[in-house]
Figure (cartoon, rainbow, N blue to C red):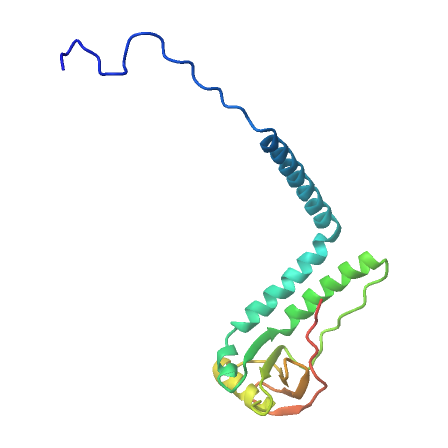
Length: 191
């Protein structure tokens, strides 16, 4: 090929005009609807947060306590006694959170909040959920926790079966593991 020659198809003359792309009417309608939907979703989200934000905050705090309780010192030792689920709950933190939740619910319902008094039965709640027929005793749960953590205050151990439907035992103990007597079942709050 001669350097002064142009390759085939590169002839002189004007290039054809570019093909103008048209935006589909369906695409425009889709984008408008999606934009309006997004604005509506943000509006509903802001309304829900302004109306129920504090209640959701209380539920979030409660969920945080439960997650922390599953990994608290002594929980794995309680699980090792035969508990499918084990939680070590700070009683003061639980009561404080439940009181906050109660105040928000009462405000929404237009009533005075009911007091959630701190029980003097325990500083720590030990919760064990086990399978029917395989549940440890409350004493066994308390001793596992005491050996692992060496607490300074009272404990309240509760063992349930059947997904926490059946209370096998609920018993208070001092820091040495001495029984302080049977108690009524621990009712963990459900929002």
